[in-house]
Amino acid sequence: MSYCVNCGVELEPSLVSCPLCNTAVINPNELPFLKKPSPYPEEKGQVEVVNRKDWAILLSVVCVATALTCGLLNFLVFNESAWSLLVVGVCIIVWVAAIPATLCPKLPIYVSLLADGIAISLYLYLITFVTHSDHWFFALALPIVILIFCIAELFALLERKVAHAFLTTAIYLFGSISILCVGIEILIDRFLGNPISLSWSAVVLTVCVIIEITLITILSSRRFRNAIRRRLHF
Image (cartoon, rainbow, N blue to C red; front, side, top):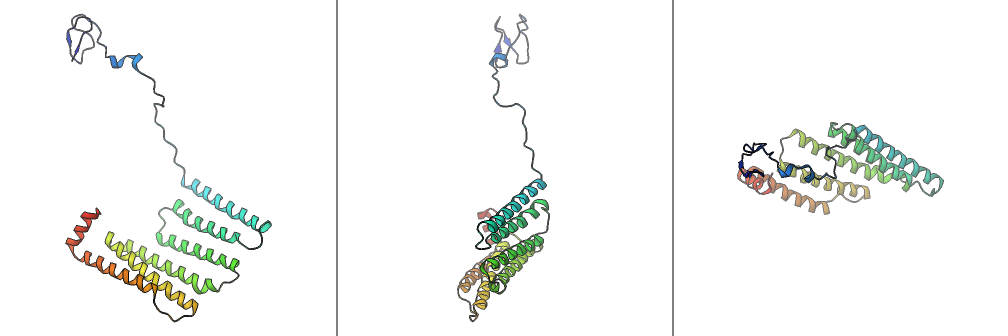
């Protein structure tokens, strides 16, 4: 409720002047001298989004520059061993992992996994020039990379082609872990010339099987599934 400052008559909120004495109705909050200038700009701006192609060019330049400078440093100064090949291999892995995701975000995950597997295999092969032996690469490292690649491809296939939820994804994950550990131990025994037998991987396999049975039991009961979803909010 407001009143005229001249005659004191009660005023309606919509009036701009007093109906009795024609005195202008002024809202103190709208007086110019009460308004303080803001120290911040009134117009809101937005930083321009960096183009994906620009990010790819920047990352490529950084990787190439790192590989070349380390190669020259290795060749001209620290030339006791071919250590720069390790840096080159890391640059290749970073480039292969980042560039397709930057330029082609819709690239199938199967192709990305294949490119990553090839890059890692190349990096491990470059290590053979430092160790002066490639037996460990062809007998152990490459088979392990192929095993991991096959498991990753199978996991991606199940995730995309088979109906899944959080619990089924967990089943795929623990199954992949058990297969990976068993496969790695078999490959190590084969590389060392030992009789193929399960030791530490048997422990991992047992734990994963128990978890898998538990998850399958939960999935087979609707009441279990609903109870887990309510408590874990998924």
